[in-house]
Image 1 (tube, one colour):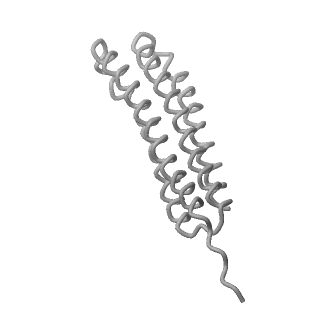
Image 2 (tube, rainbow, N blue to C red; image 1 turned 90 degrees about the vertical axis):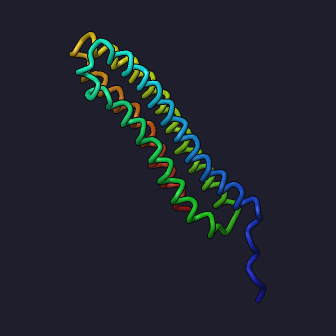
Image 3 (cartoon, rainbow, N blue to C red; image 1 turned 90 degrees about the horizontal axis):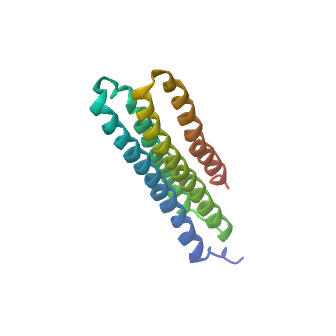
Length: 155
């Protein structure tokens, strides 16, 4: 009986690129969302400092995006070491890209909405609930990417 054929080195390469993609793109989205929202909070805090703590919600939501990338990166890292085919390497690449790019898109959305939302909230209190709803839908984009990447990592 012959030994099983080892997977090509490219399977590991693509798998680890998936790990890096999940972490890097999710952190890019997280940092952009937190930075852009933070600028809005600083601008708004000059006029209404009592609203600063209430306006931190977009920054927290942006920070969660980095956690999504870390979760997927850790899961994929453990699976890539046991990669047995090129197909698995490609699946791990797609899982990492799915989570990372979804989190990047969500971070862009959270940053823009967070910046404009906290500034508008300083002028009109009734806009707060609408801003939170929009932020939830923006965060859902990253959550969809996380779910799909977890499904893809199960191959």
